[in-house]
Length: 107
Image 1 (cartoon, rainbow, N blue to C red):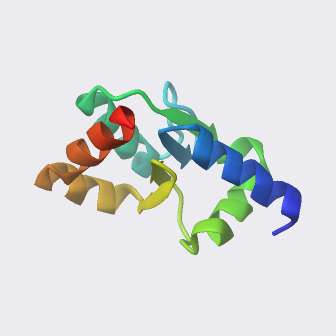
Image 2 (spheres, rainbow, N blue to C red):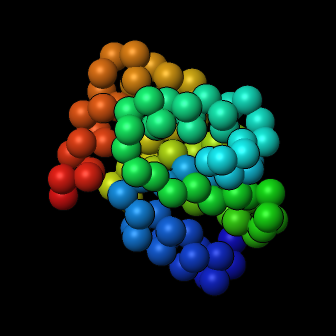
């Protein structure tokens, strides 16, 4: 990945407490997995930002290298990669996601 893309990703991940790299937007997810993530975060009632990877092929490919994770969506909380749709569902069901979000928003 080129240095410009890495810098953009660093900025997006570090400037937002919760950011989701996804297909579509939080108002109009473009795939079921992205929709799952948006719905979970909406149920928690936490503020989050989204980045539509369909609008930028550099970001779409770059985020996969950045996290060493091959699929979209990808969720970052407090600058840390958390995972994709399946992991978010598990964390939500166990209650861990709520705790992670609360810690991030309080810091």
